[in-house]
Image 1 (cartoon, rainbow, N blue to C red):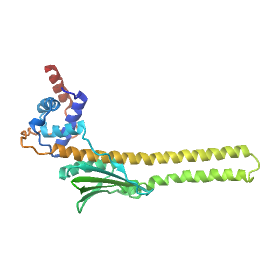
Image 2 (image 1 turned 180 degrees about the vertical axis):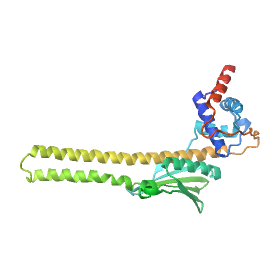
Image 3 (image 1 turned 135 degrees about the horizontal axis):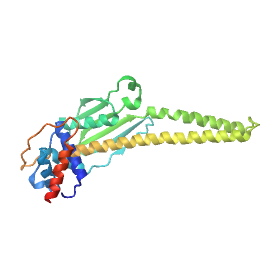
Image 4 (image 1 turned 90 degrees about the vertical axis):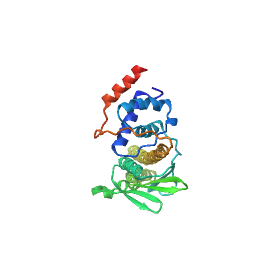
Length: 277
């Protein structure tokens, strides 16, 4: 069975099934490029009537595609963040559909696609009360062709998160005022409890501010991961759709279940393959 584990095979079969179900373009498969892992995988998927081009594309995504690392742009803007990454390839209609699904799943909101000069822009379209939440209505993803590569720019407002600093600021001011009152003798009695109260307020404000800062850093990390995921999909699509002269014939397509693949059938084919070996 090569180096692929049973869990990896199931993941590839499931991904290939989804690629076929949503009508995303499969790759052109070259016989000379099929390694032992792919040959073993094809023996299983052929029995499941899954076209090899979808299996090949799912295999590439499962095994990983080397991509350049995305980075955070220092725009000196405390109220927003911007992530930039680059990927080799082009974005066609089918790939754009897959990228859009990934973006909307990440931000948990629908959006609109607009086409500008050498740009494709996805912009969040919040509905209802979400319109007034900056982190929900502000996300934007831009794909731009630059020197044969696709530049991915992800931006999101952090104003909503920044508002959470207000309690920490108010607590810090209150604790400092307690401390000042003690230092200048405004509070003569019960200095001990007053000092303790001041210390507790300042400490609570400090840790709450650290918590909010951690939330902001996590949000930036999530945007980095989104950018890298989009990069990987574009790179995978390029590698998978590279045309070759010696193309294998496509396997017959079948109807795919609405939300799942036949797991029992997959297991039985894998076990039969293992018994032959």
